Amino acid sequence: MKFHWCRSDGLVGLAWYAALWLAALAPAALGAQVLSPTEQRVVQAVDRGFADAVALLERTVAINSGTHNHAGVRAVGEALAREFAALGFATRWVDGAAWGRAGHLIAEWRGTGQGPRLLLIGHLDTVFEPDSPFQRFQRLGSDSARGPGVIDMKGGNVVMWLALRALREAGLLDSLRVIAVFTGDEEDSGRPIELARRDLIAAADWADIAIGFENGPPDPHVAVIARRGSSSWLLRTSGKPSHSSQVFTPQVGSGAIFEMARILAAFHDSLSNDPPLTFNPGVVLGGTTVSFDAVQNRGTAFGKTNVVAESAVVAGDLRALTPEQLARAKATMLRIASRNYPQTAAQLTFDDGYPPFAPTDGNKRLLELLDRASRDAGLPPVTAVDPARAGAADISFVAGRVEMAIDGLGLKGRSDHTVEETADLRMLPVQAKRAALLMARLALQRGTR
Image 1 (cartoon, helix red, strand yellow):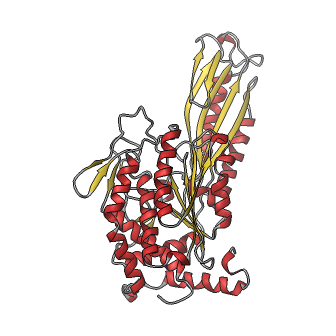
Image 2 (tube, one colour):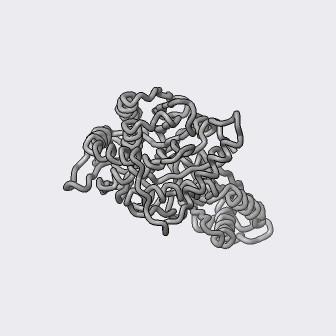
Image 3 (spheres, rainbow, N blue to C red):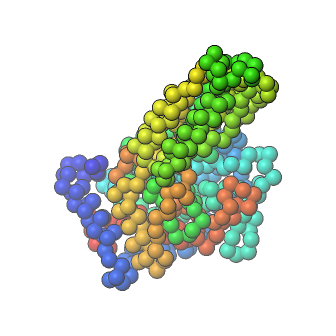
């Protein structure tokens, strides 16, 4: 167990962990707890900061920060760095040239050096590049707003900032040690991925608890304690070219396309019964000659109906909930690809992007604590989302490196990644209160509220 702040007395760390678990499991049937005076100050500070938070959201949404607009990503980082510096955080920019992206913003708060170590995760980029027609923040009445990245995830960055500001105003921030990492390439990660996520992984190795501020599914009262990872795979098959009248003969065999079809059919039959594992062939080409660009996922093929296909290629993705499930799927796919039709061959390769964020007891306990804080504040309960509804995200890189982790504490809304991306502004203070109270209770875990 990784309780860095009490290494001089391991029993203190165990006592903290047990107290945190018991607090989270306190039965709701006892009725809602009255928030302590300190927690009430946190809630009031969130409410006071709502207008400033919406203004910050509008300013950052107005900056185009498509992943490949490096200047725009840096500009959003600069805007957030100013706000975090005003809270007393030390900020720095990590240049991303080594992995072909803009880079990351890191903001650090060391506090008194006694509290738990928290890693907070956001990202600066969006899927909307400068040539997108979707470029501005638009209020839609008092309760909602539309704009590129307004929920994914500039809204989450603002929820994080508002929660931390409320903790500072309530005098609780000093009890925590915090590193906030805002990646600049979450929507399209740079390569090699080991470099692109090196700083996030280092922060996770330092931290005890990780909290992600992605928007998550549209349901406003769910959080994410498990996400499937995202890997890509590329399969190439080859056959012996010949006149089609000779197909299936011992000398010619079945050809590249039949071999590809055999493998895909076997993948389907072998992998489709292990939920929530999914695999999907997204693009396929075959014929006499094939040209495929794996970066752009596009290509060309030439062939004739009376010629046995010489080449075929298919690219797809693979999503697993746990490392063990991913390993089983890969082993199955490799085994299938190795049992070739006559006169054919197959080559299967994998590129692991986001690792699985598996459900753990620690994650469940953190959700229970978040749920209890929400109820105590008079807000609706928070439940876990089905991991099949949660895509890959940066919190996946902390899996196995922290004692507890949770995601989905960002701004809620609908239609992310589309030109209808819309935020429910009523959820901004709700999510900030939940996040702030969760962190407050982590900060106050040694005493009574």
